[in-house]
Image 1 (spheres, rainbow, N blue to C red):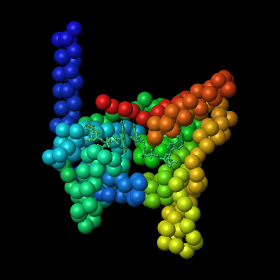
Image 2: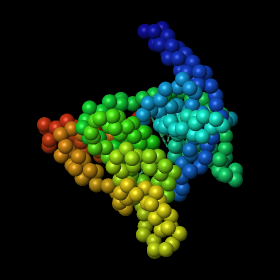
Image 3: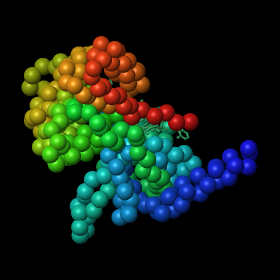
Image 4: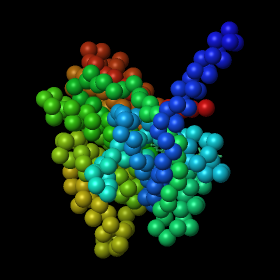
Length: 292
Ligand SMILES: Cc1cc2nc3c(=O)[nH]c(=O)nc-3n(C[C@H](O)[C@H](O)[C@H](O)COP(=O)(O)OP(=O)(O)OC[C@H]3O[C@@H](n4cnc5c(N)ncnc54)[C@H](O)[C@@H]3O)c2cc1C
Ligand SMILES: NC(=O)c1ccc[n+]([C@@H]2O[C@H](COP(=O)([O-])OP(=O)(O)OC[C@H]3O[C@@H](n4cnc5c(N)ncnc54)[C@H](OP(=O)(O)O)[C@@H]3O)[C@@H](O)[C@H]2O)c1
């Protein structure tokens, strides 16, 4: 029994190592983009031409610095076009919330640079895709909390682009953030959903009202002006209300990614709705993986 297990392990590692080598070890650009409680690093990596990406997929990345090269971390990836020297090049973009390990080390290094930006060589393995690539539902509701947004945004966008090819669906994207400052780093991506008809609602949970005319209010007004199609609500969402609103339609898919407690609540509410609406098709997908 030991030999087959070892053989399988070696086979698995060989494939992963081959993938790492094929990707190369490119220089990634890292920039600090978030503020306050949601300081985030935007990592931009040149995309190899033969590297196929799927909405909602993630990669394992190693930041090749002396203090962190042996750690491999999973992050959801988005593929974007960027102005290069000649053509518009494709890049892989990650948004990594600063926590207490490698992300904090990188953040502290960037603080010493004037533009809070730097370059680092990376090793990338993937992409890996989650199970919810095929939605069999009429309507789909995405519920993201904090740094859970990139994967759900990319799935919602891909689904909406499919919708333009003849299907008619209601796609709703809810994003729960602590402060208005937590939205700015992702506003360009959100803006790209306007023409695709995705209904976006942002819940801002920790906003404390400040007097009109202050710098903070002006910044909030500017943000809202860049996202006129987005509904902003200043409180935690009533998840039950969101789900009950949706189950009125005969077939709905719910996708959640964010704080584990929030994902648990959405899952429990969908299960409860299944009991209350036996004739309806309700599916639940979560993009919340744990790893050892
Ligand atoms: C599939 C998937 C996709 C994700 N996508 C995103 C995303 O798009 N954006 C986002 O912000 N977060 C995402 N996450 C969460 C993200 O992977 C973690 O927040 C990140 O790995 C935390 O790194 P950290 O070391 O800074 O944090 P901490 O969790 O604060 O680390 C605490 C300690 O544990 C050690 N440690 C932690 N992870 C490892 C490891 N892998 N190997 C060795 N030591 C480790 C650190 O060195 C540190 O000492 C995703 C998670 C999964 C599973
Ligand atoms: N694919 C993946 O597995 C993947 C990808 C990306 C991120 N993640 C994970 O997603 C989580 C996001 O963490 P974060 O630090 O960015 O955000 P966070 O601080 O956990 O929370 C973001 C927002 O969610 C709200 N919230 C928390 N619990 C809630 C609940 N039960 N009901 C309703 N709203 C709730 C918070 O409201 P309050 O201000 O009221 O607390 C806050 O506004 C992390 O655990 C991260 O590892 C996983």
